[in-house]
Amino acid sequence: MHHPTSLIAILSAGFVLAFVLGMAAQKLRLSPLVGYLLAGVIAGPFTPGFIADQTLAPQLAEIGVILLMFGVGLHFSLDDLVAVRRHVVPGALGQIVATTAIGAGLAHALGWPPAQGVVFGLALSVNSTVVVLRAVEDRRLLETRRGRIAIGWLVVEDLAMVLVLVLLPALAGAFGGAAAAKAGGMHPVIAALAWTLVKVFAFVGMMLVVGRRAIPWALAKVAGTGQRELFTLAVLAIALGVAFGSAVLFDVSFALGAFFAGMLLNESELSHKAAADSLPLRDAFAVLFFVSVGMLFDPGILTAHPWLVLATFAIVTVGNAAVAWTLVRAMRLPKLTAATIAVSMAQIGEFSFILAALGVELHLLPTMARDLILAAALLSIILNPFLFAWLDRYQARIEALEAAAAPTVSADSDATDAADDACSVPEDIADHVLVIGYGRVGSQLAALLRQRGVPVVVVEDEGDKVAAARAQGFPAVRGNAAAGRVLEETHPERARLAIFAIPNALEAGEALARLKQELNPAISVLARAHSEAEVRHLLERGADATVLAERELAFSLAEMVMSTPPYRQMRAAG
Image (cartoon, rainbow, N blue to C red; front, side, top):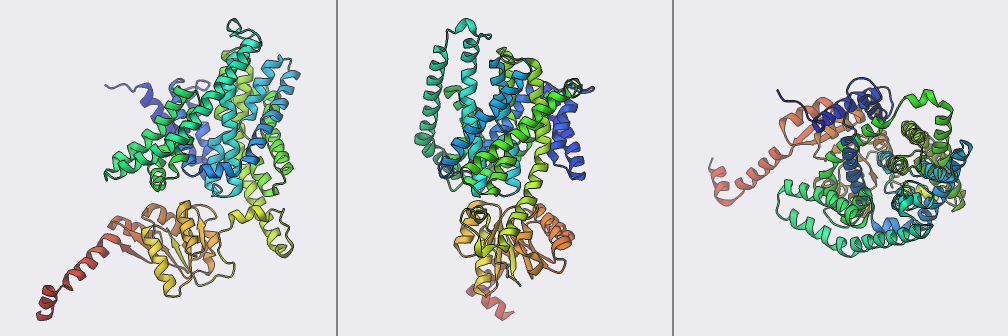
């Protein structure tokens, strides 16, 4: 009889529990993240029943963070980061300082030494890129100015935390912690800071000089072999290899190394294929990240110190959000941008856990502080989807007010930010055709329809393809057609026809079912399929007709064969 190893056990239990509870949360109209976190609580050491390996879980979660940050980099160019630098650098650093001071104030009220208060405050000030990225991607904000500011803000925070994590051992010595024997005054702190800055600048320089050329070149060479599995392997090797190498050689975080690898690969024409190939593993290991967070949580802290938990939770959510809002408005950015950044920053995540663990190890934090940090993190991650739901309603209200006041809106209003979200779909469009997917098939189809005088609106979730569609003069909405408000922005109630040109029949089936059942039952729908099973699936979901690509290709080739001279004569004779 085979006994499951710790790795197999944690993967099996983690995925099964996350799936069951994630589906339950979805049915209750909650974010699946809530289910993933509760799955971790169940699998953790503080609840009865199965207990997952506490050393493996964080490592698996780290893989999820690496792949997720690699994906962020694939959609976030260096130009995007440079474009928002004057907002994100002072904003992120200002938030860290302000929230650290608030956290240190709570620690002082509890009678903790100043050093413990600083570390406690730092852990409450750094936000989770994983959580924010999920919400930003779901709302298609990554291509907007406020979305780029939010992600850039988090990147600057991550860079700052890299410095903090390297400096903590020296600070522990300076403040009389566990490393006191190795320290002498502030000299080790200054030396550690200087050496860390040298390594970070060396890493960034190497990535910009060498990685900018080597990474796209290597991927292009692999793509030239035509081997799909080698290409997927190359994507994973770049993401994990650069992350690991940057951590070993330059002492930067895995996540930051992976982010830079993805950001440089974004300049390659193969970036969208790399993103698609890494997506399944990225999603799977991102789930394990949330499960591992739940495993660290001790529910007993809620009953032992409820008021301290509440105070810490308030600093993480209200404190971070208020500081972010104030800083963004002080930079004269619109209210909608301020609200987006404030909601994005109202939680803490992966760096907070690392910082708390290191603080306890160096005796710069009591164990109760770590438990408070974990409790606040878990509760804030659960709350964050509800805050983003509020943001959706706030955005709709702002856009409605600006639409009413369009003739007199000022340049400093939210219209300047909303312009980034514009989908270029005319409000008065009618009798148009929705082309979902602007790849090789969709782009040619849209061009042919326009030649025949048919108005077209494009839906596409790849940023470069959306840009190409808009460059060709097509109104285009970026996003997954199966998600939320994407189809609603195309004015489907006035459309005559929808054509699903995407190759994924399952995704097309979900989107067309919603289109037919909720948005416009009278609309005609055509869809693309690649097998008889896909044809049946699409018809069952509401398609009026399907095109089996391979069959149509065979018919076309047969007609071409029969039009050649010898066979044309045979047809005439017959």
